[in-house]
Length: 332
Image (cartoon, rainbow, N blue to C red; front, side, top):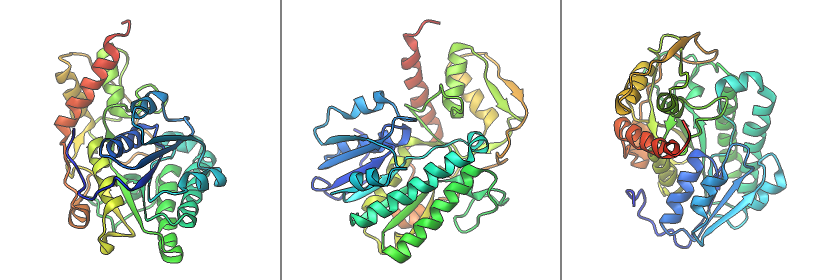
């Protein structure tokens, strides 16, 4: 069993995890179930989520699955009924996809988010935490990124996440909802999807090197990211939902390692771990991408006791092992 991120008895508490069939959400739901929550309800429409993630949760008697879409107001009200805490992970991601589909991104990420806030407020949910994104920093050039300094958004995806933060502040001020937002920095780990059109870079690299199928690096590969293992996102969600520090509420927090690596370094690390000489191909930089990313995580440390449980190297090793097992039985 992994490290425990809470001391509170949660055996009488009920939790809703939206997007709980997805990558980060399924890890949060699994943590709560392993640690004896009274009920863990997952709301997911299975567009980005997977039945295989739900299958990992089904053995627990406290698990409950509600198939539905956050764009439906009645569904959100039903999902929040009798819940003490909400971890809102449901969203559509990907900067390039948002540039192609801005209306869809707004409907899900903004409209769905407001539905969830209203439903949580109407059901008197005790605390509501939600996924924001480091993309809200946009063109703000300084490093490391401080929560108080944001620039202009560079994509519709970034705009939806910035809007989430604005709505969260309104629901805190007007409706008295207790909220905490988390600006995720390049979360990676087991169960991340390597097969979608907009797959995240680490599972894409691992699969490409293992299968020796084309791997592309955008630009020169020297752009840097604060790659953050999924276990650290789980930690902050648990600490945020359960914090009783009033001064910690109604803020947004960076969720990261506080250390960055270039994409070239990442690809080289994947190759070395897999003992491969496979090479990547370089192509044009991607529209809407920032050049460098690095988080200051002192606010989360000071307010919530956040301390990254697993560093980049350990997280990458665990991730690669997961995908090695996943693909070992497949026909080459």
